[in-house]
Length: 190
Image 1 (spheres, rainbow, N blue to C red):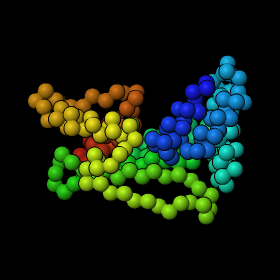
Image 2 (cartoon, rainbow, N blue to C red):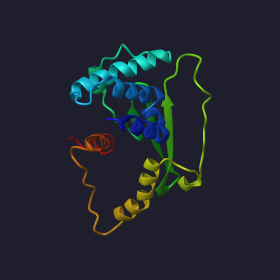
Image 3 (cartoon, rainbow, N blue to C red):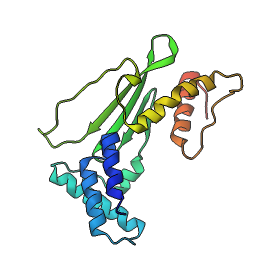
């Protein structure tokens, strides 16, 4: 349990809005306030309470949403045709892939790091543009994904590739997304 705040601090450093400073503070308090042998649901409820308290300290409130509401909303939204949202109570990562002209092997990828702030406290928006993903220093999680892209593209073009096989549990949102794409684009049902 002592490593939990360190994990959240690393996540804050690497993928900011999914693990805000408020969430890091809440996790530090969770480790201090909860017994090491606490049940999972007790930890979950305490984390929700502490995170909300830390949000209130920063002037943001999401009390209109219960923990059940947040759970039912999910953590991975795909919106046709090319948006993916990873929402949290007080932040989100948003990905948008756009065509790069007529080149089917490349795209323009927009990554939005969004965080809630109290009115009048938001920092100025910062926009960065890079011709190639290697033109800047990315957090490790992005580098791991980006480094795989060339191999994935090559594999898709191989003679042995018939079609992608998604994990029906871990990639259920992707499967559902592609089912809707086929329905909208090709008129296919199911």
